[in-house]
Image (tube, rainbow, N blue to C red; front, side, top):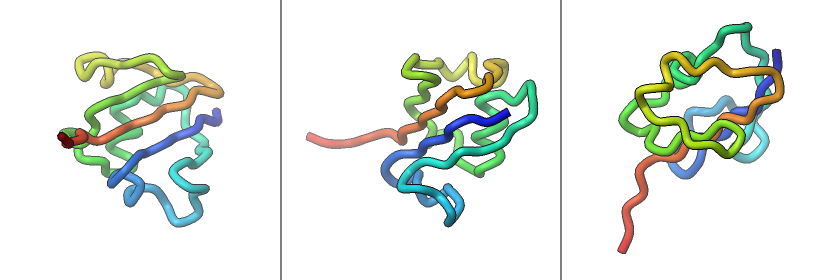
Length: 83
């Protein structure tokens, strides 16, 4: 199945070179979870601060069991500091 995977800010470095900006369309197996995608792209778990699937926040405890579906958009932001 195909999903969209988006990484923001410093996390874009974890995407492959053939990306389009901060987004890639990827084929994943049925049953792939958010945690699987974080591991597949070697995004440090502590850097996966804000995780959204189709615009809905997914808390850290749900990421290992939240399965992705055809057409989902998974977006991840690192912690942001500012003032």
